[in-house]
Structures are given as C-alpha cells and as structure tokens.
Length: 295
Length: 295
Image (tube, rainbow over all chains, first blue to last red):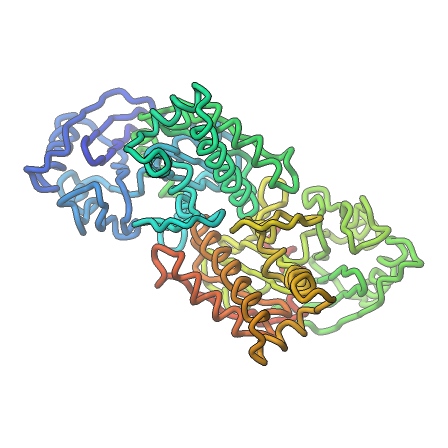
C-alpha cells in the first residue's frame, strides 16, 4: 500500500506519496507560512493528501526536535515559530483518519539511508548529517533507536576536547560547535575577526590559507574523535555521512575517516559511505516510519 | 532447566550451576594455572560440569577480550597467557555435548545487572564497571548489543579531552587513562613523583590533600563527560555502575553523575544506580547468555 511522507521544515513543508517500494510518485511543497497557525499550515498538506483519493497505510512525519515522539508532539524547536507543543500526529490522524507517526528530521533521513541506501542489509547503521548543525540516527536491526527520552543519536553535543568558548545551546568541546557548519562559521569569524561563512572558510582552505588549514585540521580531528567515540559505544557495521558540508567537501569526511582510525583499537573495521538520497531522505524516511513502527 | 555459567579470569577460573531463576546453587573455583595449557585448565571446569549428572540448557562463558564472539574464540588478552586463539566454545561443546556461548567479561556482568539487577524491566541499559580498567555493556531490548565487530560498549577508550600523555593501549584523553583505577594510579604516580596506588590516592583525597583533590576532581569531570557522551549516543533508561572503584568510593560516582547533568540537554533524564551482584555478575550473566542467545 502507498504511504505519505511529510517533512516539516522551518521554511518549507513537503508532503509526498510513496509507492510500495518507497519511490516518490507525487510531491507537494509549500512555504511554512509564519502568518498562518501551525494547524493552518498543516491543512495545506492535509488537503493534498485528501485530494489523492487513494488508500494509504499511514502518514510518517519528520520535523525538527525537540519533540515527544511517544505522544507525537512538537515541543519548542527554535526554527519552528508558532509550532510549540503542537500534537501534530493527533491533528493529522483526526483530519485524515490515517495512523500517523512522528520522529525527528535527522532520524528520519538516517532511516532512509539505513534501510534503502548504503546501509541496506546491515544490522547496525550510524547516520551522521553534517550541515549547519550536526545530526544523526542510529538504526539497529531495521528500526530507529530513539532512546529512553528520544535523545539517542544526538551526538552533535558529544564532547571530545577542551574548548575555552561557551556556547548557547551546546557543550564546549562538542562536535556541533567545532565540526558542523554553524560551529565552523563561529570559529572562523572569531579567528579572522570578521564574519566568515563556512563556504568562505573552505574556499580559503582550498587556496592554502594557513589559518583556514589550521581551523579545518582541528575540525577534522574533532570529527575523527566523534566517529571513534561513537564506534566504541555502538560499533556499527557502517557509518553513512551526509549533509551539505559533507556533500560539498568530501575531503573533509575522508580526512576525518583516516584520522578516526588512529583513535580506534580495530581501525580496519571502520566503514564509511556517503549518503545517497539528499533532500529526499526526509520524505522517504518519514514514509518508512509507518512500516517500521509496526515491527 | 539449569544452566552453567563460567568466568575465565587471569588468576581464577569459576564455574557455577544456576537454577531456572539464575540463583547460583553450586560453584567451583580453581586457579588459572599457568603451568597447564588452556585446555587442561578448562578440563578442570569440564570435570566439575560432568560430575553434576544433570541436564543443562548450555554453557555461557565470560572471558577477557579481545575475542571473536561469533566463532567463540579467545584472541590475545594480555592477562590470559597461553590462551591465544583458543576456540573455547568449540572445546566445551565437544567435551560436554552442550551448546556454549562466549562473550566478554564486562558484557556478561552488564547482562546480569541489566536483566536481573537494577536494569530489570528497562528497554535500554548501560552498564559501566570501574575497576582497574573501565568496562561496559549495552543491553537493549533484553539482549547484549555486541556491535558489528564485538566492540560495542568499549567506552574505556572514549576520548573526552586533551591529554598530553601517550598510553600503551588506550587513547590519550580516554576514560580509561583518566578515570579507571589504572589511569588514576598512573596519574597519581606521575604527579607525586613516586608510585602511588589508587587506594592511596583516594586516602589522600579523603584527608583533604589538595593535589589528590585536583586529580580526583579532574577524573570526576572525565567520567561525567563519558556519561553525557554515552547518553547522546544511546540515551539509555538507566546507567548501572559497578566495579571496585565505584563500590569503594560511591562519592566518585555521585559527583560524576551530578557533573554529567551539566553536559546534558535533558539533565533530568539521567538515572544512575549502583550494581547489585558484585563478583557473581560474571557467573549469572554468563548463564544468561544461553537464553538470550536464542532470542
């Protein structure tokens, strides 16, 4: 039976119809309109679903955290203004009569990469998405490990070194503040003494700027320690790494993988592959929530 | 049906008969005699098993790593001289006709604490044993997570800070080298300029020695970061902490737990309990391997 995958983003909302093999066969995109309530925004997606005149097995929803996965409630994500404490699965269920499941956007993307991408067939898959922030998913035996409080695979906040700077929402010494886009942006801006975006930092790196090389080398080390640390907790069969920073700068991941081996007792076991689905992962993974939630 | 639990240690070998409720109803202990081969040493345990004249569901074996859990082979543990590449489960199977399963000693102890100790009833349990070394187990949905290469829950090697000293078998900045007994022994000996055992370090700490307070405070911070880092990977329902250092110095764990909350996004979710079974965990957990291996 076909399924609906929904991706709730700060700027855009997407709904897709997926066939039995999780191919996207129809898609609807609309801005997340701040002049509307969250329910009115969702009504646009619900209209799309109802206009299909088809039977669906359910609706899977990916959205930014924090959230209560068990009750299907969005809590207070900083980039979803006006969606606080919104019981989104209940709303979709009431309006469509379909079962609905909620999980966070990184988990959902990782589920797609794990079950249908490079992780296919493996028991234990670690997904890491490196964009502005650094997200993750841990898929074990075909299902997401959410953790006791929905906070598993939140390794953006993992501490790997000492860092004299305080950060608003993350630990000093954490992966997010030192290896994700936002962290690199802050570090480069501080060191260069002027606003320096991540793209510009990488441009300087490619042109051989010594300061940029130093910043990126340190970020590579941070990422390497993060990978090694995750390995010594869950020892996955495979790491899948995606996200815009990873996609635009593959050397960054390759360098981190090489260095991670120095921190591993069994370096030959490290297996890293790039993500496959790009933006579609959020829709495919959301659709996969329905089937995997039943198991 | 009754089960056999075996604990292979560097100095002692133990075999126990456990009833259906995993109570130890008979136990046999013998030195790990270096003048004998590993097979001859195991024969002493096998004689005990065969002398029982009972039916058993199988033999669970806990031993120091590294090992190949899938083939049931002990590889090259530094404290098991003469046991290199010993296919121990095959040997027990051939000699007794019973199924046999091998896992590492920390995993086995954690399995007992998770299924029959404070972890009972929880989906996701993290066990940490802090003695000379720092071991662990991750029990999820009633079974050990061994990882793709048997290296899950090996967080003794997790990196949490920068550490100018190299170590023979562990990462600089790792939990083991900064928070376990062997690491504290090395740090204290270096700082005091003379051999200083962990017990003496703690004695000095209790008497208010400023250097000892500084060393232990740093170790508490390391342990706190380790706990927070594990949380952001697997978000367990409960941490169970055992091992001689934890048992003799409960303030050490309490201080680490308090500090770990500073590094967590949802500090109220941290739940830590002491281990219950002491030395018996190795035998009880070994016996539990048989039943959980079937699931």
